Image (cartoon, rainbow, N blue to C red; front, side, top):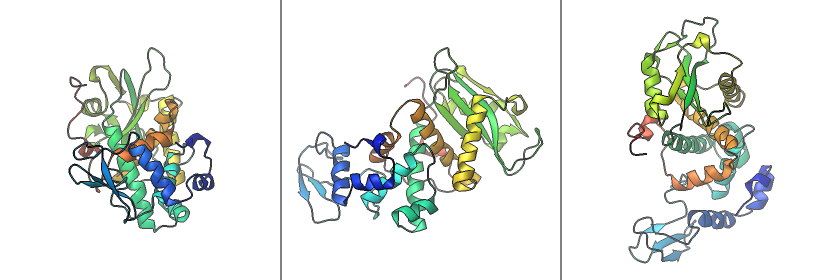
Length: 305
């Protein structure tokens, strides 16, 4: 398997995976570490068909044909595996991330293809985030992204209210798992977060609503607090990398930032984590106007957890 921590550039990554066959062999091992398993009937024997661009495994029991991209983010894509790996590695980098214009230039695809690849990756990240609520005691604040005005009370039409919250690890105040979630403007009165906004966040994004504490008052949020400074870092990243984000896709970019942030806090390999997600989830990108809640049909079920 690849030591992702040792790769520091696209050139190194290309040397690690010099051909499409090398990428296919790596992803096959990642998808089926114990050998082929039929996605339909779980049978473990298959015939290998090598007349396609990617080898097909035909189950010897039910006849189902599966490639290494079946059931993954790459299913149905005509983009090479090598370019997908480069895109995933660039997204996983904790120092910057990447936008579609940059990706288009690096992997030599159209802007539309680059945008779609990044949008699919963010959709997978959001899908994973929606199914992993904040554990334990949760503390949060309300913040506002977008058009900046001096008024601490009036909400500008281009300002987007957010809840920035984290799990508090044990009895300490050390950084825990982070979420940044858009708030329905109807859950705010000007720049005051209404109780229904807190309840909505606790229902969808926390394991225990009774231990979720959100500061509803924007004017009470200390600008030097860790949560607010983390929000400002995310703001700067979005502005520097993407030159600002509109409300339509803002949640996907917030989830991407939190994904890398949480991996860093948990001392996990971001690329390895992202690869496992993308190899296990086949998902269409969110359509404009669709809520992240469409990725999960029900609020978090505490009794079933």
